[in-house]
Image 1 (cartoon, rainbow, N blue to C red):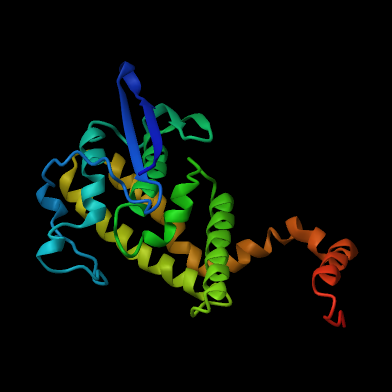
Image 2 (tube, helix red, strand yellow; image 1 turned 90 degrees about the horizontal axis):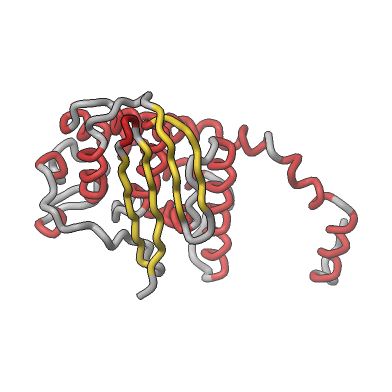
Length: 248
């Protein structure tokens, strides 16, 4: 079994530092390096459980997202949202460094952990986790999320499986994710002394909650990037690969 390894290094104030190692199975993209520590009480499935949660039964005693976040909440419970830090993120493809705030750095990490936690509502974001881009801007995230979703529809069409010709499904996925974020924030609020982890979720959700309503508007703003596909040269490419298609 191969792995995908991502490391977050937090250089906190007073010389304190934290290193978080995320290891993913390279086929399932599930997180595989949880240390086996018994989950805290606030990670119980029934505690602030999402109303749309499909999990139940003894095999799902704990919320998978909460289990994945428990160590993060514990490690950063001594920090405040707007504390400034030096963040370094190391993936197999790149090394990203930035001076930022605790909440923004944790928010980037939480997006990765939530996507790979095992929650059925967040599994759709595993392709983005595979090509994780730390501290991505809102515009970048919209581009990547829309591209991911449309590529998923391409694969579904190839398999003759039901698919979404537009972006309606992506909107619904984000609406469901908003509910997950909301209830995870409630769990963290009851479990932490400072606001860094809670505000990191709030920051992450500020994008999640608005995307279903603005995604097409945001995509319209970047249509200029695709002008080459309206060119005669591209029409010639289409004519070559589909010679029997009437261009009119």
